[in-house]
Image (cartoon, rainbow, N blue to C red):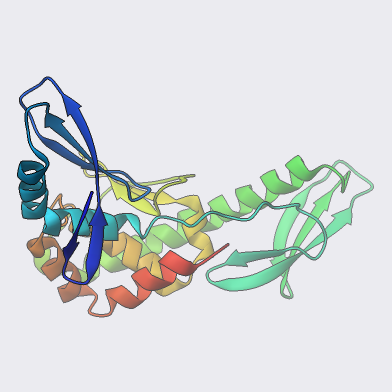
Length: 234
């Protein structure tokens, strides 16, 4: 089933059940499910869904900021990786000791390992490097963004960093900010956008008109960063 809302075509799937409840769910992959009582007609369902069109579009737009599928990595010499929106190539060196390290130097991720065929170790060293940088950089940007939103009197939230496959960031019910480790590969303005987006959820849990008014008051050009997030491949 489908209908037009503004310039957007919204497709939805119907699932009937015995319970007298109609529930609309938008999944991260953009699929809209409508669970309805068995006795509801298609016309009645369409009417209810159209009433929620604005909310559905907001959810779809939100999930568009999810990280795109990433290409498989080989972790070999010359392979390109990103940091803060810039590209750097891997330079993998073989060590004659058990010493291992990863440093960013002269435009390269210079990784030293005992066995250059050990892709898992190379990957681990690189991810550990990203995590260490992300801890410092994300905390700095979080403090900056909280200060930028001082009119809303937001208390400094706890920052957590983890690998996520469906989102760049999230705000927990307890008010903690979670950021995707891979976000450190993105340009600085995109990182600030994700942080501000999640801080706005401390003031408004859902993507309502109020939420977007707050977001726009802090980042007037947030749509540009959101669009960049939607197309960036790491």
